[in-house]
Amino acid sequence: MKKIAVVGGLLLLLGAAACSADEAEEPSESSQTDSGASAEESQPSSEDTDEETKPEAPSLNEEGVVEDPEAVDMIVNRDYHLSSDYEPEDLIQADIRYASPGDDPKNLIREPAAAPLEQLFADAESTGHELYAISGYRSYERQDIIFTQNAERDGEEQANTYSAKPGESEHQSGLAMDVSSRTVGNQLNTDFGDTPEGRWIAENAHKYGFIVRYPEDKTDITGYQYEPWHLRYVGEELSEELYEENLTLEEYYGLEG
Image (cartoon, rainbow, N blue to C red; front, side, top):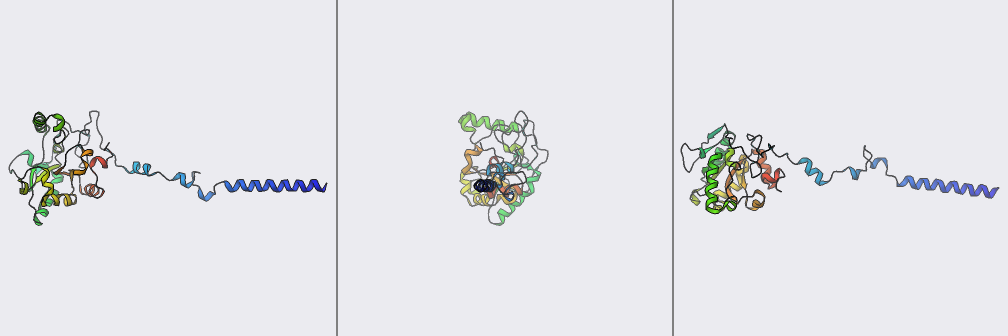
């Protein structure tokens, strides 16, 4: 009888030890989240975090036309178009130096961008840099004429690397202004980027709400050649972010693909 009792006691002890071992393998309550998942499982991946914080791209209609062309942070490119009848209602002529002064639509820019552009010109001049405004607003019809002429001369594919098709030009938005200097004869060419004025623009335009829209190292993303002269107004907060993060509008909205 004593032997049986001893054996029974040993079995009970072994069973208790096994239960203790099983309990030790379970995660402690402190290492779980309220949902019951482990702390490691509850952490979002960097991909999920990026997806959550990525700005929402401007809305388009079924024809690929931007639904809110008045928004200063909207994007215009080959996929995001402006309608053929869109013309900003707040176009004005800024108080700046024009290469071709006079009553010409190309000397116009939208009102939200006018005062910042005036300040940009004034500050550039105060540091010894004389800028000239070359071309601002451009209608759908005018862009159609320009692109057709370029396509006839260089072929459509080549023309589309430096000239936008109608509806795909930022100039129609009234938020763009091409600038140059007498250093390059007020021409719009890549040499402007190497001038003192061009370098000042690259380093300071963002302080006034403007970006150099088509950077030299992002041509594969924007789809257009390097244009150190092409300024686009996006608002000071966004321009600062794009400059600090070295982003184009395509990258900002996750459209670089």
